Image 1 (cartoon, rainbow, N blue to C red):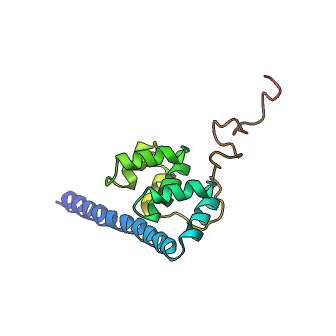
Image 2: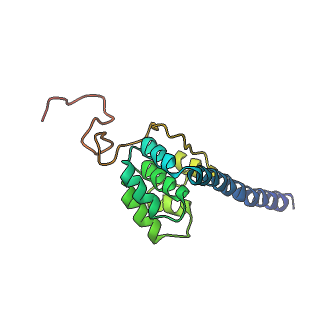
Image 3: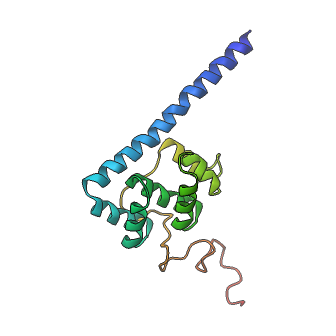
Length: 160
């Protein structure tokens, strides 16, 4: 009997926590949309700076999604999954309506990962400042596998 009550209360608490996490992401995205609607040009400039994407590319992404916050999420998932925004945009168009968590998983972001938990909590930042994980797409910064400096200890230098 005690086990049944414990299991039921645990299940109820898990179910009640799920909408809260979803609400946090929705609240964050609502705030992002409000910023965009007040000044779309500034919004696009902030996205460009934060994610290292040229403004014309940001403009194209913003025009291709229903809400400006969706453009933010395309760029955020691009950064988290270490893929080009075009890859995320293509999967977004194909998986429309399934949710950001499903899209993140399709991009290879593991459900137990730090990135996935941040996404579900809405623990994201839209500051317009270059984020630590930003990789300049089509530009000069090299990321993982991009031919630039890796994460090694410097061994093997000069051995081509």
